[in-house]
Image 1 (cartoon, rainbow, N blue to C red):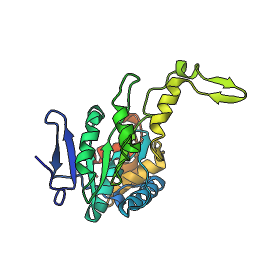
Image 2 (image 1 turned 45 degrees about the horizontal axis):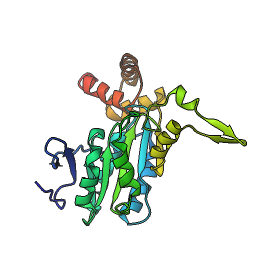
Image 3 (image 1 turned 135 degrees about the horizontal axis):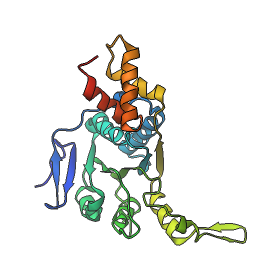
Image 4 (image 1 turned 90 degrees about the vertical axis):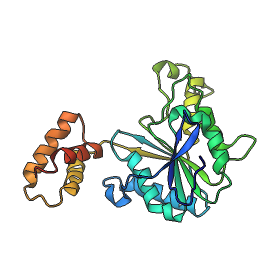
Length: 253
């Protein structure tokens, strides 16, 4: 079934059907909901606005700690700019081999598409990243002007990094020559012109997120004590932990 992009803002590639499925219930998160990531938010908003205007814009890699708002930021961009022609297609890592076919369907359309791949990473024997490279930088055909890739990952270079890979590096006439494995790792992440790093929240930042979710609570001391205990039990402070705390205790404060 073909997608009516005039009424559809987002779609997901379904491997078994080998087709796009329209998304009708989109996460309602807004840019204003995302706190403590102002630097990353400003950078990706600027890049996306350039993209929407037909100006030079980068493929973007959002990497770093889990639960810090990477995926939510991309969803918020769709809610912010869908009325200006932004559309999002989500493609899982396992389905990147189909990316050239997906792009063939949309490259002539009058919309701006973000290809969104969440939790992106590759093994050394995984060749699916080659399709991603082709879409971002082209092959014999130039990359589509109306498509950019926004990916999230816990890894800066998208591939596992082993000590043995670094042992292949050599110094030649005072210059560092990296081993082939390292070169391959960097060649993939280098396709992303904009890198945005996300780090774990400290306690003050985490409690700021909790306060935003409980705006009417008067007993902040008890709220904060419960929130700190909750984050400790989960093993870390993050926006996701704050949301999970709210889901658990929203009716108790």
